[in-house]
Amino acid sequence: MSFLETIKGDKPVFFIHALCGIGDITSHLARLPSVEKTYPNHKIVFLLGGYGKSPKLSKEMIERQGYNATTIKNYVYHSQHQKMEEFIKKTYVKSVRGDVYEDWSFCKEIFQNEEPPFYKYPLAFPYEYNFDVDTSGIPNWENFLKSRSVLIKPFTTDGNAEGFDHDVSNNRFWSAEKWTELCRILVDNRYLPVFMGLEKDLQNVPHLLYSQNIPFMNFMGMGIEETTALLKNAIGCITTNSWEWGIASRMGVPTVCMFLKNQFFIPIHTPQEPSDIWNNLYLETNPVSTAKAFVPDRQYQSAPTRLMDGETLPINIYEVFDFMVNNKERP
Image 1 (cartoon, rainbow, N blue to C red):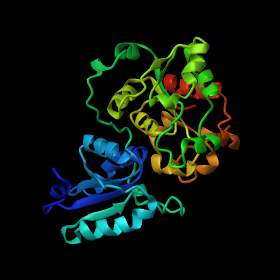
Image 2 (image 1 turned 45 degrees about the vertical axis):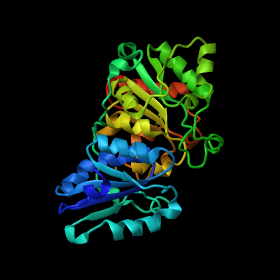
Image 3 (image 1 turned 90 degrees about the horizontal axis):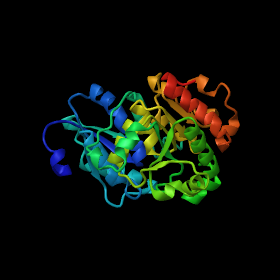
């Protein structure tokens, strides 16, 4: 069904204007059960813009969850946002039908220290992300299930607005050496490191592991649905700030995210109210930057501000992760 056919008729529409990335969409989806409680008679429709393949992949994810979405061609930059908002309101939104329009792009709010409108819709936990995957076709799937598999994504090289090199120089990521040391500690404690993402997201970590005879499994290059299936069935997830940590943590998987840069985005992806998600989610970040997220103080009882530079040791991250796996809560 086309977009215009979707919004035809007398049923009121809840329009969500979203110029954002796929990680943002994973968080937006978890707010939709709250939207449906508030607007039970409305049809939810996303209008998507964004960088690269993000709008297409976001549309597919939204539709897997049973909602409607359309992508807006050549809609990439924040400078286009205001005119696009005016066009959407004028062309599609029908107030006489009872339509609701909300901008979930957070283009201006996040940079002007204002609250986006979606904060009023609590994030659901747990939240299941749908996938339709024949796992028998995934190589080494049975070995993955039998092992104490920990999904790991050391870097994220695509979709960085300021560029990968800029993020590296500004300490968004741990070093390859630290990831290698973490993998060694995991293996020494009977976990199996399993890599996800693109090949370039690993940088030279596999080479370092080979040189030290540290075993690992590789699921690089999987699509979003296959990766979601992996996350659902892993014993845990340790990753850099990318879309995978949101999916894993909301499905109840013990998750550590290295959120070392742009911490002002944390409230977008975390609850604005108390939530049991914090029993299986730990953000390695700067506590000073989390004022608008409901991050329990006990996460940071011993956290120095130098965490912004990613200076915490691999053994510290392992201890937090292992505690969550074994105790179903965070230390």
